[in-house]
Image (cartoon, rainbow, N blue to C red; front, side):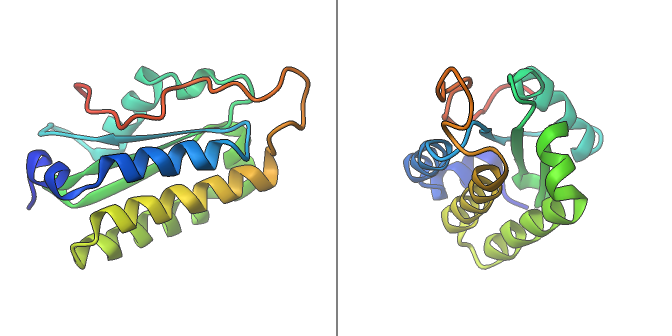
Length: 150
């Protein structure tokens, strides 16, 4: 069990936020990383609430992705909005979460999150490349790590 505070001390948040920004330059998709504190209930339900709270359901192309980390439970949930989910499916999200969990078991927190962001960004770029539509590629959501109350 790792508290959110301990996890964040060991995570290079700047590297994660740079990875998000870098991934989003190649796609119209949006990626958010959220680190949960203590909560009651299921991690999946918490992720679904965070997905809505962070506005990932309201991106113009419905291609937002949330990587929710619950350090105290050693759980990772990845949710993609309907448009990207239609392209990659549940197996992709499960594979991303498993990869993060493997890195976390080795104490490689930053590497796990950055690799996940890179893989998500790659999938988004393949299916929703930047510049593929009129209006450019606005950054619809912040690239910062979310620590909000879940």
